[in-house]
Length: 262
Image (tube, rainbow, N blue to C red; front, side, top):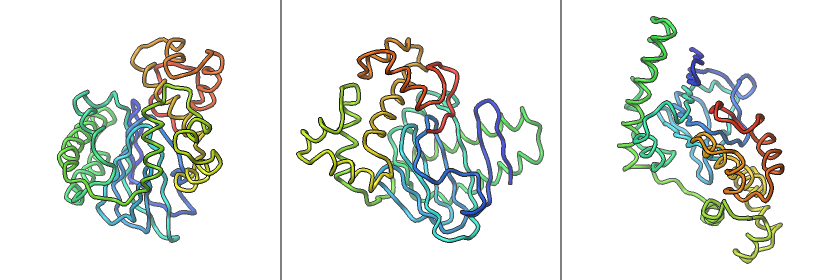
């Protein structure tokens, strides 16, 4: 078991239970990639509207900005590797490929050896060497996962919630809210919010706000001015955007934090 946090790279090999763990199991969003390699336990994982009961050797790829959570079904050991890394760690071509593949992939148990190497590296090398070796293994794994992404596993999902998410993401820079979504889908605002929260464990209003701030965060990271970004993501005044950004992110609009969880 190990826990390695250096230069915004956060890799760990964890063993715990629902009663003793430092993981976040409730629904949340973060602005970095996360790869979970499941070793054993009794766990189901949900990413957006898709859920799966995990089997040993399963890999979950969690894209930045996606709602996700784990459900531990029994009070037994839950062993997993967790790799958290900012977009900046991987080359642009690889980020583009990763962004197109699903979170649940087929035939990933064959990559067990890559994760076992991480334990070996952590025991044998110094911090700078570990960091370099971890990044090399991460890049190799990501390239392999992109290839496997063409054979992604089909997971049942809620089509209605998918339609809401797709509409929100398509119109995220507009002034969308429960009323405008109600007009589009011909359901009452309360019904839409109830159905969304039932499946996503997050209110629709909160999801829209978080997606707007996520997009704003990406723009700011790319070098755009915060005042310009506020207008582009649909805020009518900067002070409202500024308060919302701090409430969601926990810090002022800047380009020096990639590993924030919300």
